[in-house]
Image 1: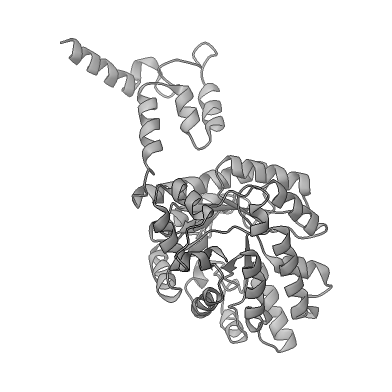
Image 2: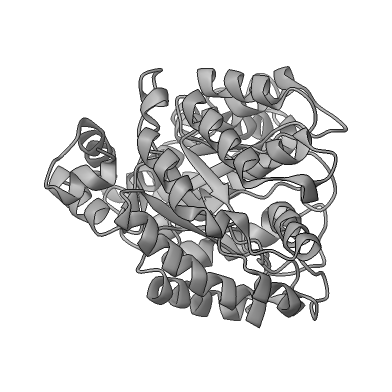
Length: 432
């Protein structure tokens, strides 16, 4: 049984119990959310046997974040990507995706699966494309074979662009930036050059058979996500979203867990509407969004422009946020870019969880506030999302003698520290 089938049969699995404990919810609540398709536990049975710690992704639990990794055909290697993965997980990434292209994709993925105790996702089409001179040469069997091999390796969820149909492609021709999804553009090229329908759509049931065998979670890819504000919420994006809802229902009928992927570049005022449409058309399946980026004018700072949109998306019901780094639109991220992206998205997810009243979400905020008022610097560093950076920033502007226990920082110093003054007022009042 998959986690979905077990939940629908009334069975609470060990993975459901573990998720319930982490989320401060009852196992029965988790089972019900799973059974309704509102929650997924991406946990390939192979990966579970190698130390995977299951997590829940859905609107009823805390907002999760994903960190994209993977070498390109031009730069990086497996050692570098392993370092990025370790840093991302250490900073709190809930899942990672291997988007590697170039040589040795299978070997890199095997290393990531072996060392990742969080769910690992992939886009199988990238490996298929690397094996061929031209994507137009792809046969459905080529893709099915790669999906099967990745499932046997232990991949927990896969992005497959099965909802992009031939009829949708002309809708994207009116766009400013066209089709910006790598997978979506490859599928569109295959359909147009061969004059055939999307093979992932026509072979959907066969793909479900593979996914069900290993309990790989579907992440229905949005091949027509908008790549700029001018293309947001257009006919192409919405036509694909409707098909995603249909395929999500079919996958659940066949025993598979399903997430839905979402935009993209969306103006701030359209985010709530996008979240509402997804809930209605996709039966509240967990929504996994990239950003969304809320302005196009800040290359080098898109971890900020997208974290703004991600906070609002999570506030309105997105279940998982795919991080964006400062290098988005510019190049392959390095270790520092990964740090910046993960921290920005942990902030976005946490802010939404606090606003939505998730159980225990504000506990850490209250604890660090008490430590701040008490000038307990070590406790503040421990509670901070990135304590290493917090420590460095404080200590680099104080003399060595003042760095450890001084009841002030270099912003105000001892004379103008408002919290120190507040503490003195309390002491004076108590003395009276």
